[in-house]
Image (tube, one colour):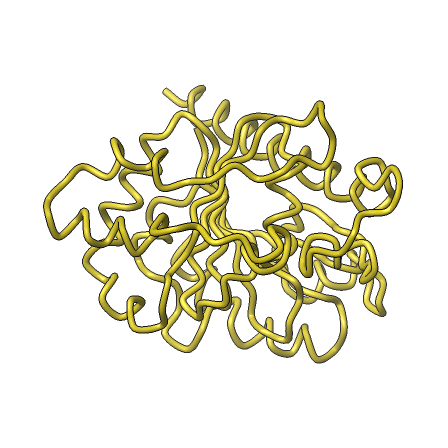
Length: 255
């Protein structure tokens, strides 16, 4: 299946909330991976309302690589199931991130093994990579990703940061696109695309109160799963999946 990396230039555009929302509305089986190198355990503390993952997550996968155990065989045991937005939704699995900031620096040699395991998985994989950062994204993420999505707001401050950091990704990956959160606030999709000459893969509504259900574990209002905010996430997920499938068909059609 496909690997999609979500990242941001900064300015709190909601990359984790967007990644979580896309995973929960993905139209087929998907695994969400917390690979934020500035660990916050936001999904565990927010959407899962403080659930403790035990020892599951990237920390234990790091130990497995040191013991030369194949990560592909251990992956499912390190994940937990996320509560669906609607009973009919496709189940979503979640791989918790770094248990401590000190683990991030030790994980360098484990990135290739993790990405190989994710590439062998029979589900789509969404990776929340957090901010791009001054050193850029880890090379194995860039090399294995079928699509890198840079999440951004459309304010002048957000776009100024995007102008600084987008080239670090775009120069090393031809499969880079944007996800706009709050198009038209104030700059439109057309204006952003004209400024950056980068494909816009999807748009998500800027809706702080509904988004807090995902980011902060707020109590969902009645019919939240069918709200306009969640509908925007579903439309975005469908758009991204369509792009992935179209690219795969194009590659398959090449002689």
